[in-house]
Image (tube, rainbow, N blue to C red):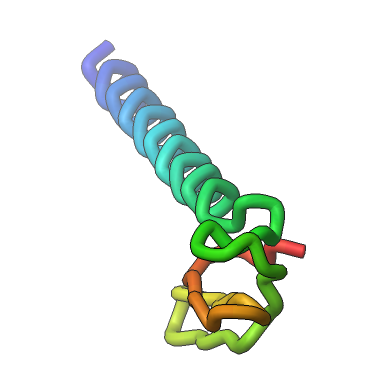
Length: 80
């Protein structure tokens, strides 16, 4: 009986961890979509173009710059 309780606690902990991970990833993606603004610069209404990317271990960053004013945003997802 005690063995089953430990397994249930581990299973519940794993489910909570996975749920939180998915929630954080969704929040990060929603933030990227908001920054991306459908590829329109929030400063001058110019077009955002891919300007570079970086990768360090498991972190990926993508940079987009406005073709008119040079305003640059950073996202964690490719946004095209």
